[in-house]
Image (cartoon, rainbow, N blue to C red; front, side, top):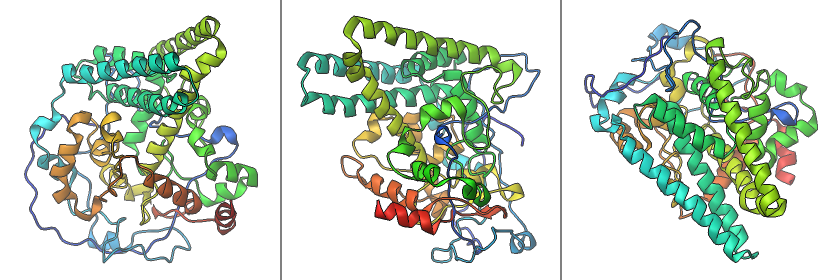
Length: 450
């Protein structure tokens, strides 16, 4: 697949009326993991760089074809779907797995040009805001040091660690600024502080965006096939689909990835990376190691219990935020979302399977990362323009955009979406190019009892 970095608005405007896509029968679908270390997730993916590149470019280049191919009438009549899929996945005649009647360039043309402008000073102001908040919260908690304050601190600080990750995530995409060195420096400082290997994650995350919605090639919470699911023992299945275990998966993913995928985000010779990228991976692993050394030193200065309260528990809160948000970007909608294989997959169709989520008061705190559909299609757009860009794109997207449920100040409603998805989204068919999550009745029954 050819790769481009879409950097400007333009292209022709989209006509206001579109033909309705044809409906196609399909069914349900899911994901799972063998062994505890398979509990992986990420905002991430493996390497897609080419060998022999001489010029270093640390910004994330995402494969985004200018237009998604539309199928002919004959091809659409012959669309292959998974075996034993008899459920009609239609909502008032709308088939979410059908090719959309618009192109990527049509969406791009609808987004105002200023939404693509990266302001490094504005980006840095968010970094300053978040860093001040992190140290301020720690100072207040250490000063009062009582069991009324600590739980409030853990929730607030875990959320702020997650906010730091999102800013580092923008650095990895190159949406933080147009300066690759600034992106790398800030990305390393932010991600190393929360024990994330910046370049290892950045390279991995690139493949997620280049292959979003692809059964085999995606890297973030991608589904497993029915055959693989049936090889898992009961303990592994329950760990994979019983909360809170899936929300503690990210550190395990960084070390060992997910089922069927080998490599570590810390090892320069991992399958994730090309020889050209190994120096970057070593740099990030050294930064991660330096942060671990700082934490060990702090444990001698303030004691391990105090360090656990100030850093350890918030770190686990951050991990749970990351797993929750990234999972719900691609799962848990009331109607089943398609996953693709073969020629049915395209960058546009894969990106349209992502979901926006409303987090109430937390939207601004974690930099509108819940505004995810436009981010997946155009990751070069800075986070502070995502909401405006989404509003501009909605008339083009039509029913392919799923309006998020409005949240109360705190997004407790999303826990219901997560629980429901964990009970029903277990695996996808081994065959078929347009597939949906299916449920294991035995596992669904045992989870309901729990």
